[in-house]
Amino acid sequence: MSAPLPPRVFDSPAQLGAELAREIADGIAEAAGSGRRYVLGCPGGRSPKPVYEALAELTAERGLDLRHVVIAMMDEYVLPDPDAPGGFHDIDHGAHNSCHRFAAEEIVAPLNAAAGPTRSIPADAVWFPDPADPSAYERRLAEAGGIDLFILACGASDGHIAFNPPGTDRHSTSRIVELADTTRVDNMGTFPDFASLDEVPRHGVTVGVHTIVANSRRAVMTVHGAHKREAVRRLATAGGYDPSWPATLVIECADAALYVDRASMALEDAA
Image (cartoon, rainbow, N blue to C red):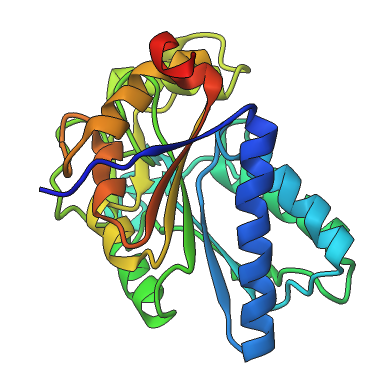
């Protein structure tokens, strides 16, 4: 058993995002000075948006060079396809709920606009697990030397992380998974253009629990909003990985931290 992670509490999501963005910007600059790649693990969704927004601002303020930065994404929705290698293919990368679209529009475009055309993240430096060969992502991350910092986020209702549902084995790696209905309901909040649960895909390609734990040199779980109070309670009291709440994997990551805002704390803890 490990000691629970004490939450670091911020007054607002913006303050949380600014603090983590400063650490990432420092890491990007240090890696550039050392002549090495900087690999940033990134989820899609609402939780990390304040981090991405603050990082774009810092990129402009500091004149950061991003040519050595890799964005390692966690997952993508997939659809059954008997003619595709592995039996699945990605959803349309331009779809409103596509993680490829999110990475392009919400992460890379603002960072590259801030950095300028001669200092931008290369197009081939945005990585995803491939439904045709998910295990290749394990090799790619290992060959890159791991992930310098993995930003993590937690599902509000079931503790899913990436597309890993409750019950996920600690030793799981990148693979195709069937999405839990609780995860699909959470995703309706993440992607409000869904008109009904029937529109939410039922499968995804995702990194596994072991993928994150084994490859992260630093991991920061970001949680904010009153709807995440149960998530904070579960994460702050966990003494190790609990498969009923997969986001507790952060406890087992190297150099782990839990960043939360006051709204996500239980009322007696936030007082």
